[in-house]
Length: 270
View (cartoon, rainbow, N blue to C red):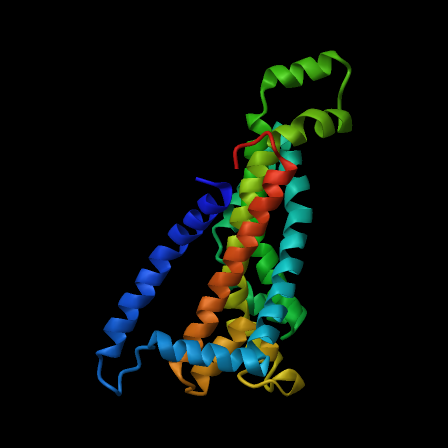
């Protein structure tokens, strides 16, 4: 089989299950009573096209993407150095681990009231919630990555005179990168979950009226759009569109991370 044929076969296999699920959903929902609130795929598609044409869906997704990226980058900037430091220093890990483990157990949505008090009912509060939710997987996986580096390599590097930043840059960081990368992927998934929860609450406070004349609360992000559609008793089909949009964008983000990971770490199995 040619390379192009193999790619087509792989693509067909990847869409087979989603197509089957949608077909079963259509048959089931289409046979329900007319007054049922169960969304029908064909109607969901019509709603999606309407949101795309109006620009509301694109606006909501773009605002959420910006908040996710902002919070994720903050978590990355804090989590990797902290994880490296804890992985390299037994004393720091012994004293900081109880704090990390305690806060790790607190769901990001539990901090929404504090985020609103600290940052006000603005997008900054949502970014904080995202950063908090994405931080801990990065920290823990970075610590694990440092500890998984072969101790013989570390000893050999120290024998050759490497220490401090040189040891970190040439041995510890490259060895820990695969584990850090796993933490990054997990963190990005949690970031998308956190942004929806944050915008369901923070976004509602931030934008009592949609910005730029957008309908359906699109100016507050995809999470606020879901709340707006529910609160105003709009067709549940549009809520499903928003839910599916989050899943699709999160999936594409993960695929991008996988592509970057393979390029950055050709020696690792990703």
